[in-house]
Length: 203
Image 1 (cartoon, rainbow, N blue to C red):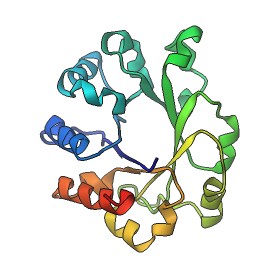
Image 2 (image 1 turned 180 degrees about the vertical axis):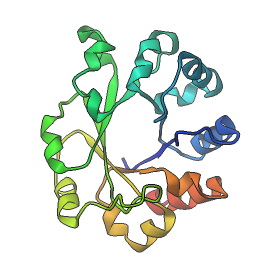
Image 3 (image 1 turned 60 degrees about the vertical axis):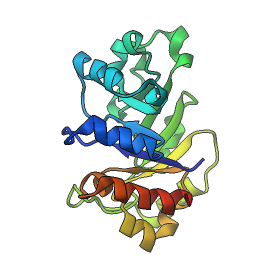
């Protein structure tokens, strides 16, 4: 499935829950709350995001300490947290949850196990928000494109409508794409999202 994902910025968006609900209703597949969150933050998400969209939410690993209060099942493991999942989960319950992580070179694939449902691969393009954070070379990107396996590979980094239109070959071999500045920096986020969705999914 060609997944369309968004990663929230560290700051709150204006009318954030209203914006997110509109995106979910317009076909957003996954939403990752990258920012660190308190118990109150997590419970606010639980309260304001309708239950039918809860399975599309990906929370930071540290938020797993409140999983029994929310029932959220998907968590993102940062590079420095890999191998520390046991601090938050009992071994016998690990199979009940789904995890994602981010990698920047193909060799990191070797250290991942089938616990991960997907990986964020970056940067596909030069970063729009981090000067000097440049795109991975084509040969490295092609290693991901030519690999197989059950872990979904989500392209990330500098993706916007213009670059997708000009360089479709950069993103087309991935199982999904993740939007950051290419969505949140747009004046009309919903219109931009619909155009990207049409380009990516053809709908």
